[in-house]
Amino acid sequence: MYLTRQQLKIIPSLWEALDHGKARVKQQDWQAKLEVFEKTKTLYDDVLRGRDFEEIGFFAIELREVPSILGSNVLLPPRDFTGTQVQSLEIGSKIDVLTFSLMATSNGGAAVFVWHKQDDKACRAFVHSLQKLPESEVPHAITRLVFSFCENSYFSPAWWNGLPDKTKEALQRRFLKGKKGHDNQSLIDDGVRAVNWTVRDSGSP
Image (cartoon, rainbow, N blue to C red; front, top):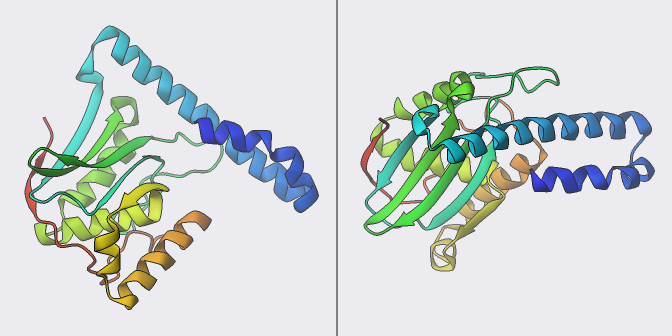
């Protein structure tokens, strides 16, 4: 939300770099996203103040190992892990917001997805597509998610330096493509196997 606010502030300079039509579309897109984020923040603030966590949905994956990658982001997922569209991001559409965190824990790691139940439709469809994957494929799907959707991410230098060059190049391409936008191939399995984590458990209440 705070990043989007700052992006809106630099719109005047975009008029010089882009033609007016492109700058106007970009401004409308950022303004629409800011309104979605602000509405979602209000929903979460209400939950915290009222201590009514029945309005929160979540899905968590517990990993046996500490992840070599950590990251978090607020997602507006257009498609799931099969490439199926779960929502439209067109201006004026109802947009569901999903938060994601990949973190270390006291006995390994966890990938946690959280959403407000007003955003249940797209978010639940998104996590269900992850649940349907074979357990051995889940860590690789999470890695694709981090490199495609999470600018706020960190990884172990030892892990990165130990990867084959082709794997590094594939992850770099994925990250750069994610910064430009997403399509129906963004989370599809590309055969890259960069991590060796294993799933201990998963579920939601």
